[in-house]
Length: 205
Image (cartoon, rainbow, N blue to C red; front, top):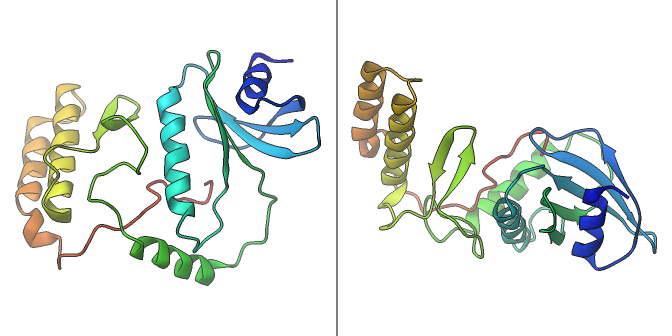
């Protein structure tokens, strides 16, 4: 049994029959997990990853799923043992494409369910940001931004500043982004309430 399989067994508190790697994923590894009593589950993991990251993903999935507008994989367990943390979800069989209209209607209902505020983590999630490579996207700022324009301007300024410090963005480009951020209220359009969003919605997810 692999180290991750042993960690899954501890997280589930159930014997497992197999834990086999499967194709897919981007930065994470995918697994097909079968329990001793025949349940099939999906696992995702990353060596050296953060337990908090996977726990926050679990909180986000639960938050999206509680709306009931679209099928969302149920969270079974967070794997917090060993050096390869991960997440165990319901197994979803591949289905046909071509349900774009239904997906759009469901997403609209999810968005309309609302959120606590802009740039906020899902209820139950912890931490102050999300790490993408060398960049940290700050979340749950205090005080919270006043509307979408304030949140977006803060995001632009923060990421432009990080890129400039790393040498990935010149001073003139950083200043140009600052000017766009200064016009956020003008450019953002009509004021709208915060929406409940996935945040990483693409075909691979």
